[in-house]
Amino acid sequence: MIRKLLIANRGEIAVRIIRACREMGIETVAVYSEADRESLHTQLADEAICIGPGPSSESYLNMERIMSATMVSGADAIHPGFGFLSENARFAEICEQCNVTFVGPGSEVIRNLGNKQIARNTMKAAGVPVIPGTDRPIPDAKTGAREAKKIGYPVIIKAALGGGGKGMRTAFSPEEFELAFQTAQKEAQIAFGDGTMYIEHFVEHPRHIEFQILADSQGHVIHLGERDCSIQRNHQKMIEESPSAAVSEKLRNQMGKAAVKAAKAAHYVNAGTIEFLLEKNGNFYFMEMNTRIQVEHPVTEWVTGLDLVKEQIRIASGEALSVTQKDVKIQGHAIECRINAENPRKNFRPSPGTITALHLPGGQGIRVDTGIYTGYRIPPYYDSMLAKLIVHGENRQDAIAKMKSALGEVIIDGVDTNVDYQFDILNDPDFQSGNLDIEFLSTHEIGGVRINEV
Image (cartoon, rainbow, N blue to C red; front, side):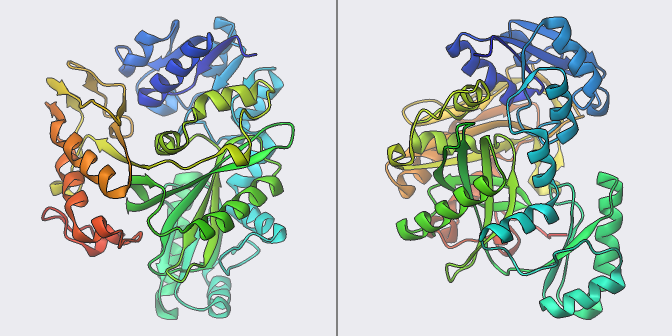
């Protein structure tokens, strides 16, 4: 069993991991940048070690400093959380070479699944539905235009490496293709240091449906149902829920089996997420696999009763899964809203600053994952997410009503937030009826704000 775990992350996910470790009797080590010296995770951990200045490139992305902190503290494991180094194959490889347990899949698996082209080909060979597209990297716009004609417009041009919506452009006709390709390739080169591109058919008006999977080193693989993550801006999720209003029990079984098949094809071990695009006609296609815990994992925890972080740690310790597929039962409905320090009316401008007053909701079926407190200063260097507000109800309408009530209690003074914007989304008739897809926010005016997608 893991004895002492270093958390290579910050904010609410670091706090979340620390709490799980406390309950499991595992000592924790927090690492922090100079900007995070007063952060909650540094105060809750058994030890805290500074690893550099505020910019993430000099702290949370600095592998050498994180490994030095691991050696100095005597930690025998590292949990990477999400973001930062969580899907960095080189970091996982260094952990393996230093005999430090990495709470996640092996480096080779991360490397293969991190390359979207390799991942796509792996899934296609395993019989998992994939979107029609290129099987080989596309070096230039001229070659890409020929392939796009074969695939059929509209097409989406994607960076083979990376994520977060960078290095992606859509072309609806041959006339648009060259500029879209060059723009996406240049952005990918800047963001990821790699301009390798591939092309897929662009699925119009799909839902973003992802399946949580767990896989142990004994070969057991299960899924924990789906999450609907269709409410997003520029490919960044804002509201997630489980189960999806668009997924029947029959479709859940079909997609779940495909997700398990995908994990097995990748020789996956630990918690992971298979992301699909779901068309209105029920066809679904593999999009990518995330080799880490997800921001939205609490909605799955609510409806299944499982603690995913504890499961991650047990799997990394070599234990078998605590449940079988037959044990997994989806109970009720859960919704998560990401509370960000940003101003939706000013093009979602980030709002760093000091929180002067704070009140967060509570009560039955309400959970808040956060690392903020009154007097906390939000640094300008990192993601703007302050908290995750998660509710659980008997059904979707009950969960929506509970979330509206909970959002109405939130007080975060001193900085701008998106709380009112989230409330307005929940009040939209199409959202309430479940009539939504990934273009929802760009096709609906919410609270006087209409998003113009890039």
